[in-house]
Image 1 (tube, rainbow, N blue to C red):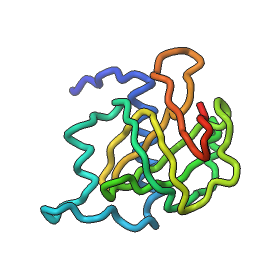
Image 2 (cartoon, rainbow, N blue to C red):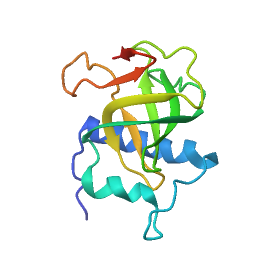
Image 3 (cartoon, helix red, strand yellow):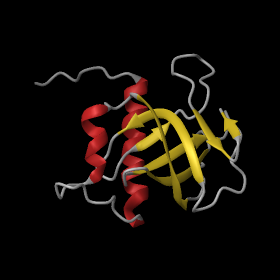
Image 4 (cartoon, helix red, strand yellow):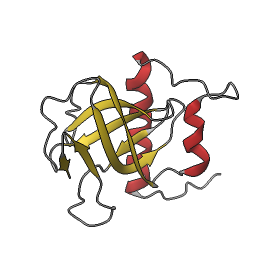
Length: 146
C-alpha cells in the first residue's frame, strides 16, 4: 500500500492555478518558438521553480473574464519580452481591479510563478494579508496595484 505524502495548502493552490491556467489558455496562440526550435516558455522552467517570485514586463495580448469561483480574480494574458506567455491571476478581493485594461497595453508584474507548457501563471500579484507570500504587484499606466 502506498502512503500519500501530506501536501501544504500553498502547494495545492499553486497546482490548481497552474492547471486552470493551462485549461484557460486553450484558445491562446502558443508561445513563440525558441531559437533551438523548442517552446520559448522553456526559458522560465530552469530558472524559476513553481512558487518562486518572478518580476517581468510584457504586453497584454488578451483579457479574460473574471474568475468568480472562491476569491475573485481578474485574469489576462501577457506576452513577455522574449515571446513567452503568462496568465496573470490578480485577486480583486485583496487588490484593486485594473479597470479599462485592454490588449496592446504594457504592464510590469511581480508575483508567484507556476510554470506550464504555455509559459506559466503569475498569482499573488498583491499583498498577502497573512504575510506568508512576498508582496506582488502590477504596474500599469503609472500606478502600482498591490
